[in-house]
Image: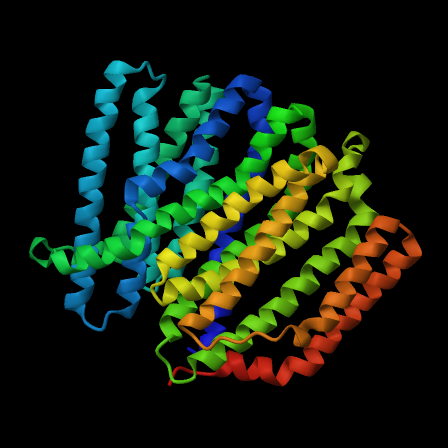
Length: 466
């Protein structure tokens, strides 16, 4: 299949799996808030948030290394070595972590200690198997497995919370069971056993996998810091009410962020598979340029529409969130584009470099937030997020040239940038005539982009590997 069409197909499949999870989380909000106390709901949120840090430590991101080297391998022997070595290393880590955890339970009193142990264990195993599905080229299995996890979680939550009144314990058990069933499905569908052989465990691959994967742990932690440090600072200085306003403003940018994340998942695979092709540099550059234009048009369209629907969607008590939304949308735009460049780093094995850039952005976000806190108050959070992601994007674009002759010309997207600037002014003026004009201009920009790039787009979509 041509590379461009493969990118679109994989994005669609992964999007279905990811969106199903987001929809389920959204639908469960009234269910949770009706049957759980605020304390119980907060406890569940803590467990879910900590998974973003705990799971990378339990797997050392070896599933990402396995995915990358599996794609590049040319023989069944290599694939068996990669999978067997990855599973062996993760099994050893999980055994050590399990022993440490259970010894810790004798020192510290932990509520739901069995359920918490199972919760993080099955999520770790599930994340490994999901990457195995992608590595094997079976994105349909990935999408179905993701959907199974989310849909079964709903069913089991209803049973354990509403039926048995297990509350927090019931949520943990529901997650454990849904991940187990999904994992069994993936093992049977992808036939993972054909890649597992004790004699295929390789010390050489163990070193390569660890060297590639371990830096990604710090990349994941830094991403978590960028996403959650603002809220911790807001809670400390301004309290829960102000944090509620900021959280609401983030709801709109999180929708865009979800799409960016799914697309980047497919893009990462696309880059790894095509990087050795003779025309790979031209392909990567052109797709990146088109994506930049489309992303910017997308967030401009959202900004044009929001003045008409904001008060229909949001209670008037949250009107202060209105001013933060365009800033956070632009921040998510640069975050998505920085992630695209980061995927190029990862495809070429530069995981240490990509982690350094993410750590730097995380520290930058905290420092700028604290500096602006006294003068900008809540806007310090959204501005610091925007600035840190802009710097992350610029830094990665500059330093990617150290190992790849990647060139991105801002003049080619100047029109989209101008239209975004006009839409931003119209948004804050909240003048309906200006906003309508901005919306029409954005639609004309979409038409212009199609007319000026349609031939190039069809060429990219149908360009096959050489």
